[in-house]
Image 1 (cartoon, rainbow, N blue to C red):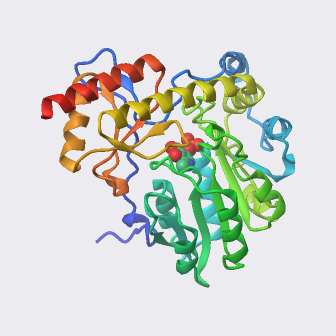
Image 2: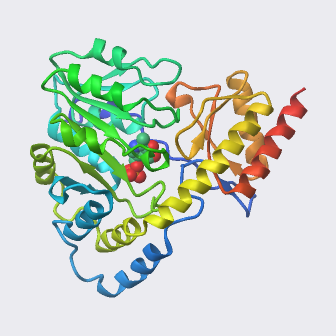
Length: 361
Ligand SMILES: Cc1ncc(COP(=O)(O)O)c(C=O)c1O
């Protein structure tokens, strides 16, 4: 008999499935499965990475001072209200560990990002899944499921994998009406792609129950470096700083993220390119007869007739070297999530999908 047992909840965790990155038999693979920036990071970030190679024997900063200052200067937020983590995944996990445990409830929405459930279970808390309306977060549905046990409410805005979002008035309403012991986590992994949206910065500034989390993995093109951060009320940030590892971010990761956030012109260019190609791609998919919600992100979510057609299209795309993401795990089996690549990749992709649909007739 094995007497060594993990904490309750741990064995209920389904292993996270990342987007596939390899296809046997294909030298040229078009990877559109992980919402990465097709243009990669700013050249300034790549230079910073090379420079960091000369001091690999040195421990990194524990305070993340320089990165926090760079974020603070570029996005106009106080640096003492920022915590940095190994991707926003780590911030999600720290939040669950710090603010929830056995007997507590962690709310997220029906098609919400997978790490919310994983981190809640790892902390011993009970996940509560709230229905969306037409693949969009619904504040009233969330409020109906709040209780005295609710400790955290996760909303990705815009959400992955739906690409949809709700407006600031709806978020403000939620913060006004949610229980006092609960913290709203506004996940802005894709916030930079949205026009006239600050990811929730102003909302955090005027409330005491909201934290915004952000990542360098998407528009900054640094998924491989693993850097994310959170901006929230001082007492929340101070608690998270105590729980995180003192050297959670490596020196190259800190240097690269700092250089990346200092190059906002590059971010702007990537956003413009993405949003133009995304509009073109959605239009093209709709013309092929595939329904597609408006997306506020760097991916789109076309709907097929049924699960079987989505699966066959995925296989056909693979046979032509394209990797996209099945989203059965998000209870969206008749959809495929496709990252917006560069224009020529998207043109080829659309051609392959058209070919597939013609062959089906
Ligand atoms: C909504 C959302 N939040 C958080 C993350 C985690 O990002 P990272 O840990 O790479 O910063 C992702 C990654 O796909 C995401 O889609």
